[in-house]
Amino acid sequence: MEPIAIYDAAATARLLDFGVLIDALATAAQEHDAGRIHAPVRTGVPLKGNGVMLSMPASADDIAIHKLVSVCPANVALGMPTIFGAVTVCNGATGQPEFILDGPTVTGRRTAALSMLGVRLLHAGKPRAFLLIGTGQQARFHAEAIGQLHPEAMLYVKGRTEASEEAFRARMAQSGVRLTPARGAVPDEVDTVIAATTSKTPVYECPARKDRLVIGVGSFTPDAAEIAQETVRASRLFVDDLAAAREEAGDLLQAGIDWANVRSIGAAVAAGAARYDSPVLLKTVGSGAWDLAAARVARQMR
Image 1: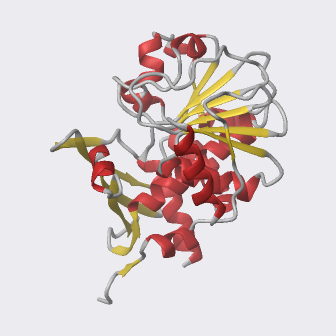
Image 2: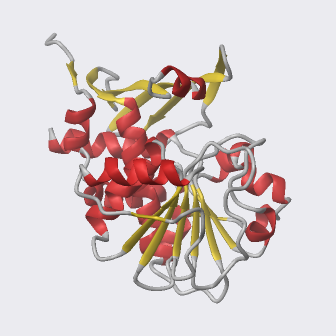
């Protein structure tokens, strides 16, 4: 048997174009809802210092994957990345491993692409001004996605401090993405907010607005909520994975929402682009199904 190809972060990124990823995710979302992609809620074991190691398998007739990643927030103080991991891609019929992708890159690019799918389906109109809350890895991937797919839109970044905003702006400028520091505020013209932090308490507390789509992607534990409860309760709610969100979407769980009123992104894909008469909020917590969709794209492009 030939050696299994291993793609590092840069090579993995080259295989996962955001535009192609969005279409693959739209297909996978409907397959997941229909039971044609099997992706159980992730399992995790604790690591020292509030870290966690996560296992996320998924399978379909054509392909199967297993993502194993570690998330260690304390690594920031050590000057190290907070996420390490790999995605093993296998033949869906035989189970034979085919290649391995860089886990953090797959996670970052498919999460950002899923947010952009949400913008495509749930936004009230053409986005003109984005606000990214957060200056970490997920914020970087989202800035790159917005820069590629919505280059004409204004892009603000809101960090813990003005210094962190300026540092993030400078880093992204090296990649050709132009950002404007928000100076700790939420500019009124912003029509799309993306919260990409690991905060346990809300980082976005503005009242819900019909002309502003809110997307929460950073927190994925019941005790963490990036979006204020009042904003959640006043919004029409969509999630990426209903089963996972019921266990992990702290933003929704802490707000005590009625799950009968929550819809999946797959349902939004089936409905097509729509205009809603109420504020809309999309909460994503992640699923192996989205890593499987990314693996399909990588297999096609390699």
